Length: 204
Image 1 (cartoon, rainbow, N blue to C red):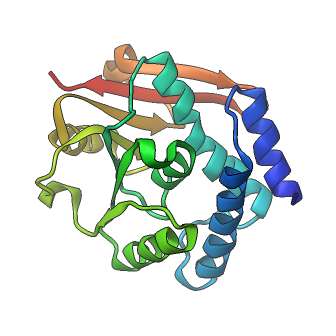
Image 2 (cartoon, rainbow, N blue to C red; image 1 turned 90 degrees about the vertical axis):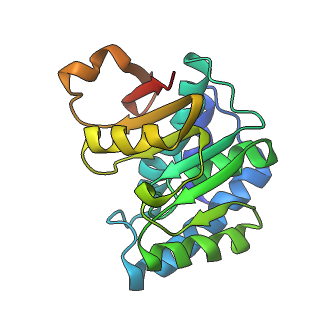
């Protein structure tokens, strides 16, 4: 097994996330495709293999623990990744949860949409790419996740509009949380990684 895959597997194991061999194979393909496309399309500023598996793959998978902690059942649900970019966090979640979730990737930039379509074929996993500004999408989802996408309150407003009644919006935040959102914040610590903050809003 490649060193970077070993790093991902061990980091997940330490934090109670179990990756199967087929998951690791798909993450390996994902990494290689991403590095290849990144040379031309600049999809991520993170370039090193080890950094990609930690800062993108593992970071996306921290949502697994958030769903457990917040008791959000995503089995059989429609999940939207708002501002998907190079597929984070949506594609790692789809790799992990496989066909138990129905994934939609919302991305407005054409070159990123093309990458996401091609990535799905390479990984042999099914998801729907919605190549459109999120404000213009009239579908509604059970769970909307967003990672590092613009100004928090803007994401909050648009994200809530994408939700079904009783749906959840989860915004992954690395930086300081705005004061008025602290009551909605779940903070989790991960061994070998540090703290991850999530703003969790339920639509009534």
